[in-house]
Length: 279
Image (tube, rainbow, N blue to C red; front, side, top):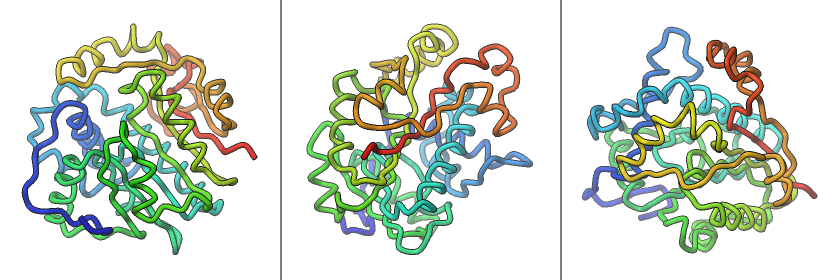
């Protein structure tokens, strides 16, 4: 594999936790087909087609949240880039296509880190669509339970540069101690001016509104292993200051989606948050 993400032709279809990336892509594809979408992803459907939509039928009810979450993180990265972060790291990048579909400032360097098999599948699909990134993109095939900082450094990551980190669709699949270790490591690699965005699931939401989704994920070997009830406190304890952590109601008002859910649980945390590194 070279720095531009070229793999051999032999690939395996995603399974287990990696299969959830296909479900998220299906949500992005559904949003892209709307008359007035929150974003457009011209590659999402190709990932779903390569696997078969029936493989992620159980995640269809998640598509509305996927759309809002995607737009929230799009906006976060756009703002971080405009504030000067020219280095971007997407951990557990999955089938993320932001390197291709967002308007990046000149000089932006974007790293995508995830399991080698999933990235190989992704590169094969993108190659078939002749996709071209809008920034300098580097894929980093690595298991995040191993020495991913070393792999990132070897790929050209510079810890002395302000970085915009994105941790999307990862924390619930790790144990609490693993999440603590992950955030400590991200902090050590973050120069002043760095930013971070993440999603999480609180314990009440997992037990109630997302109980059926939790069962579906258990069935494909992608169990949620942790919850987070105080994201602001957790981030603050690891050296980050919350910048944006909207409630369900605020998020619905911002993007014009989820009015029914907002009427029911509007004051609850949305599960989305961005933060800046404390000096």
